[in-house]
Image (cartoon, rainbow over all chains, first blue to last red):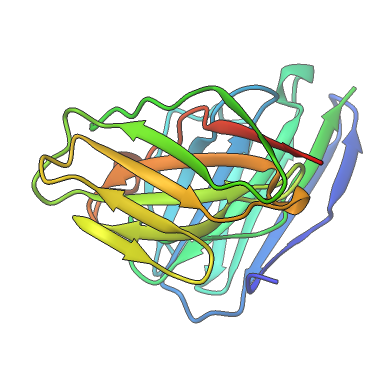
Length: 113
Length: 112
């Protein structure tokens, strides 16, 4: 238990669906992150939030839309995804922005049909 | 960005000591070295972090030579449950998140 929870743990969706991934951290951290991990590839940093403000967007397609309503919650809204978007989506948090000690959630295994 | 190089995979028997070396020739003065462990279908877990010489905690030891161009993660007496992917990261303690990049890691397989 890392103090970071993610729901759902598994998600199967069609290319025309709209779904959202949720992340919650119970650690009082100031920064939150979304990562994508595809099979046999390194983790790719997608979005970074610091104190609810988006500070980094690493050239992620607009079909991924993040939302950070408060410092404890982070969402990733998904719409019109492609099969190549199937991956493990990981949320992480850290005390300070860009800290190399990050706490990861268990991830959401997403399959796009 | 300080690039890291690790072996793709390693095999070990249960009870042995495992040493995983990471090369980071372009490490900057303010960079720290951090290691993570990742089990299948889980998020990475912070193991240990250091700047120079030796750091030890209840899980592992981290050896960093004086030139800091490499580091070695040492896992004493591994068990089957240590089978995982181990990532070496190099970057400042805080700052721009994109400077902290995970490579492909080292896949450690522990067998009886």
